[in-house]
Amino acid sequence: MIGRTQWAIPEGYIPETSHGPLELESHETICLLNATDDDAHVEVTVYFEDREPVGPYEVTVPAERTTHVQFNEFEAPEIPRGVAFASVIESDRPVVCQHTRLDSRQAENALLSTVAYPGDA
Image (cartoon, rainbow, N blue to C red; front, side):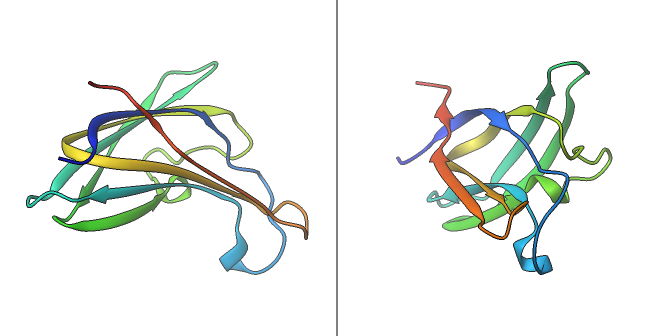
């Protein structure tokens, strides 16, 4: 079976400003792949340097599908812009987790992407 049930992203940051149209808004995204035959119920908890964690935010990834979730879209509470954070992703089914950031503070956009750290064996 492909995937794991725990993932960690130790680095996160949503820039306070963006350059260009709404499609180029600076953001952090997790891309979740569920290759199983059942829906995956995922929880995302966000950690900070100087405040209590927030979440868990709940995400469902349908069976044999992928879902892209922007940290910018988490509400109650909203993830603050301009503040460093980390996250832990836990799922009741094995999933694959990839982390992507678009930093559009300048006209010359920066994009980074990496597979998150798998936490369970």
